[in-house]
Image (cartoon, rainbow, N blue to C red; front, side, top):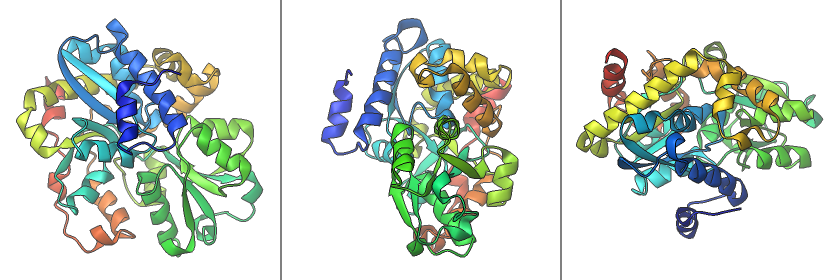
Length: 354
């Protein structure tokens, strides 16, 4: 498998984990980025965006925008890179290695408490798109988050949004954060393998991993947050998750570029809302389906309800995220967060009306 020079540089910097999964995602990103009409053909302004798992359906707008040629249409040469977890995409952004990150909006609140000004500029979703899976072997022992005590629960990475949401569900249901063990297992094959081998009793993941687990008969769905109604039931409101977020100083200094990115992403979200899961799947890199196009289309279909059609932050969404984080995150619980500085609708509203 080919590894890019950038992959090697990031690995040397110690920013990569679960390298086998990441290498596959990076290869897919690099191949597409160099593929002429469907990717950044080397022309236009160069922008690097780190994604918390390019092949995850929750972050699909990133690669889909590339494949549809919308970045090129805006005169941008966007280079998509991949990390197995959103927390690592956040690290790459804050360290200045990339100009943007595609990950969960909740990182903007967490970073503000650490003195970092980061904001969501395009909000892809109004639900987490996450699913709590329970191993079939432990299905009788874990029937709700109340049973998390003493269990090993998989998350993409420690400090990731799956980690945040797992902790919230535990605390909300009377289980202390110290009473269960979060295990960083990534997504895709590494998550499936951990479940299969009993390294975890369950875990939080997204499609297409969810579809694979169910198809293999390895687990069952405990909590489904792929829809707004699922988010409302589990978290008490809309939960804006996947987004394009960037450092505020960079946004303010490159408004024309950010507007072009917003134009491209909003165009993609609109396209997604008018096309079937099969049509969307056909636009994605062939290897994302892992040899099963029907299963991949099913995974997309299950997750489509989480996406916005216009990239605008949902009303009351930031408040829900703050409530969730305050339940278990001592940094945020004891801090005053200025939610108005964690996102902007300036660019997407111009894209929608223009």
